[in-house]
Amino acid sequence: MNEYFNQDQSFSKEISREFFRNVYGYMFAALGISGLLAYIVGGGEQVMIGENEFPKVFAEYFLTATGLSPLFYIVAFAPLILGMVIQGAFHRMSLAVLMALFIAYSVLMGLSLSTIFIVYTDGAIASTFFIAAGAFGAMAVLGYTTKTDLTKFGSLLYMVFVGMFIAMIVNWFVGSSQLDYIISFIGVFVFTGLTAYYMQQLKQTSYNTALSEVDRNKLALIGGLQLYILFVNLFLSLLRILGGSRD
Image (cartoon, rainbow, N blue to C red; front, top):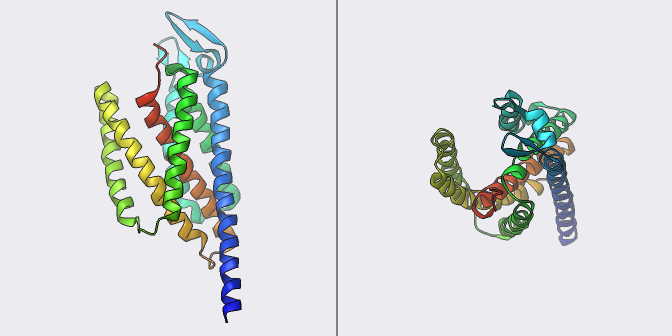
């Protein structure tokens, strides 16, 4: 009896390890695509437009004589809609369709993130990235290893996130730097906490032997997307707090 139990445990651990390899594979692939595109569009050769300096590729596609082009706003807000579609309808989609949408999401996020190279110095971006990676990694380990049920904690963080999102929309029109600073601090707390919560949820999913291979692959992709979104938002929150502006 113990022999069968040990074999079952070993099998569960193996499929759990494979699940997380896929999760992190998707996450790092998305970060690679987005990071490379963000640098290509937002970095590189600079051009003067009026009294301001802009990256050449960014200026060619996202600027008009009167300011930001409509294409920029489409690129900026499309990932929000696409992310909701992927996470809300993935059960009805094939893995191939999900993969295509996942890549599209990573590309759009990379184009959107290109603006950070205009606002912040390369040194500030690099240092903040490593700080975000350290905080993200620590909370991921905590979420995976803790014995405490984080379900209620995750629900509370979601409510805080909704309030924070509403405040961000209001601040879009108000333009308060102080409110933006407060939102960024709240964002660090929310996104690090949600990282721990999601890791615990993913751990539970990884040990579910009843899932089919297709469903397991889909959930690994969704898990990678969720962790990618959390990391990017944690990075942006820290960048607004710590980043050195070019001005």
